[in-house]
Length: 382
Image (cartoon, rainbow, N blue to C red):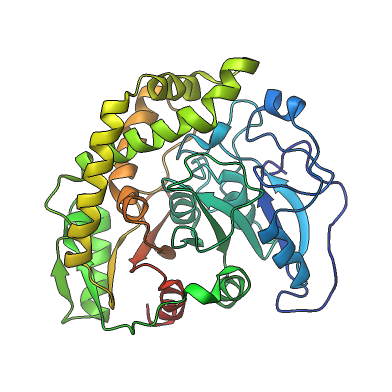
């Protein structure tokens, strides 16, 4: 099972066999507290230093109380710092929906496991696209909820102002059920849905084949749909400001442990760690101001009640085993598609819709804060 870590529990874990999620089997990403087990965050040296958890993460308790059965812990990208899905320590989880191609990261194992027929859903996390990208590459439903909508206590932090807990499923009804269990009902939006629009400035960055597939689908489904531009800013600029803010938070949450413990880190991830270490306070302050202005801009271009549609990723899954330089170019392009939701704390769902030469590509729904339930409901209409 290429998607499970070596320290995955040998026996199933369950609280009861009744509830909303009864008879459903699931997996959890290797960054969450599972009672009496250790986590590695994708790095074996971290695992050796980790103390077994004295309890379950609160979100995990809710899932178990709802009747689901935990079947294992999944591989993730090392310290969650990639969107590709390859881990030099534990291997690359096999993406059976795109053979020979990466599953996407950092929730790689959680997504890849659902390309088998062994599980009903899985838990991942999304900071910069770590649920949305693998959902697209593996042909799954995947959600990045509104930031802070789900309790992330007991989940190892990467960049807390962006970190969210998310989940995957193949079945739309199961996907919706997880939201009923995990989403904080006190924060549910009171604004009603008005219309779908196309985020044209995201769409035009996709490969020509994906643009054609998307336009053919939309023209048939919503021939009168409006087109908008989310931001006047170049999407590379948005992604770069995201990178600075994320890196600044990684300096606080991950790098101190690395400096003290000196673990063996793969070259790809080490390059990214070194990049984060060089980020200055001045860069962070400028990026934070950029973020605040971007939120205001997108509140105007995509107001409450409006849901934007666009391809989740600009291409389907890349082939496994490429060089770090090639992977860096993929990550850079992916961040142009994923960074807006993170920068604005908005929810985004990827649903399986298209295929090109190598594998699946998702279509995304980007909403307003706390409209997660509406996004889940609207999947039925797409």
